[in-house]
Length: 62
Image 1 (tube, rainbow, N blue to C red):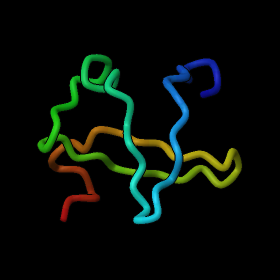
Image 2 (tube, helix red, strand yellow):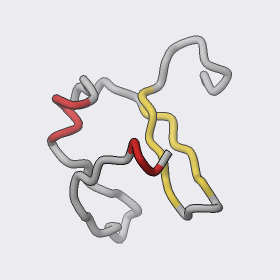
Image 3 (cartoon, rainbow, N blue to C red):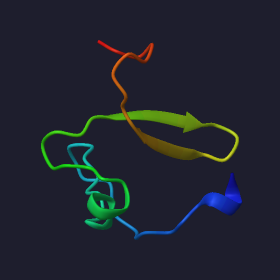
Protein backbone atom coordinates (compact mmCIF):
# COMPACT_ATOMS: atom_id res chain seq x y z
CA UNK A 1 0.00 0.00 0.00
CA UNK A 2 2.95 2.37 0.59
CA UNK A 3 3.23 3.14 -3.13
CA UNK A 4 -0.38 4.40 -3.17
CA UNK A 5 0.03 6.81 -0.24
CA UNK A 6 -0.08 10.53 -1.01
CA UNK A 7 1.09 12.95 1.68
CA UNK A 8 -1.42 15.76 2.24
CA UNK A 9 -0.37 17.65 5.39
CA UNK A 10 0.46 17.35 9.11
CA UNK A 11 -2.11 18.19 11.80
CA UNK A 12 -2.12 18.06 15.59
CA UNK A 13 -4.56 15.94 17.60
CA UNK A 14 -6.79 18.43 19.45
CA UNK A 15 -7.60 18.15 23.19
CA UNK A 16 -11.11 16.93 22.35
CA UNK A 17 -9.67 14.20 20.04
CA UNK A 18 -10.51 16.00 16.77
CA UNK A 19 -8.17 16.09 13.81
CA UNK A 20 -8.79 18.64 11.07
CA UNK A 21 -8.73 17.12 7.62
CA UNK A 22 -6.99 18.93 4.76
CA UNK A 23 -9.26 20.82 2.36
CA UNK A 24 -7.79 18.80 -0.51
CA UNK A 25 -9.95 15.81 0.48
CA UNK A 26 -12.95 17.71 -0.84
CA UNK A 27 -11.64 17.65 -4.39
CA UNK A 28 -9.50 14.50 -4.26
CA UNK A 29 -12.08 12.26 -2.58
CA UNK A 30 -15.32 13.94 -3.54
CA UNK A 31 -16.16 14.44 0.15
CA UNK A 32 -18.81 16.97 1.23
CA UNK A 33 -18.63 18.95 4.48
CA UNK A 34 -21.28 17.81 6.97
CA UNK A 35 -22.45 14.93 4.74
CA UNK A 36 -19.66 12.46 4.02
CA UNK A 37 -19.16 9.62 6.51
CA UNK A 38 -15.82 7.86 6.90
CA UNK A 39 -15.00 4.34 8.00
CA UNK A 40 -11.80 4.51 10.07
CA UNK A 41 -9.37 1.59 10.21
CA UNK A 42 -6.22 1.10 12.27
CA UNK A 43 -3.21 -0.66 10.76
CA UNK A 44 -1.33 -1.82 13.88
CA UNK A 45 1.68 -2.97 11.88
CA UNK A 46 2.25 0.46 10.33
CA UNK A 47 0.67 2.44 13.22
CA UNK A 48 -1.54 4.15 10.64
CA UNK A 49 -5.12 5.32 10.47
CA UNK A 50 -6.97 4.78 7.22
CA UNK A 51 -10.06 6.81 6.35
CA UNK A 52 -12.35 5.37 3.68
CA UNK A 53 -15.55 6.98 2.46
CA UNK A 54 -18.42 4.98 3.92
CA UNK A 55 -20.54 3.16 1.38
CA UNK A 56 -24.10 2.32 2.39
CA UNK A 57 -24.68 -1.42 2.64
CA UNK A 58 -21.26 -2.15 4.20
CA UNK A 59 -21.17 -4.43 7.22
CA UNK A 60 -20.18 -1.40 9.32
CA UNK A 61 -23.58 0.30 8.83
CA UNK A 62 -25.21 1.46 12.05
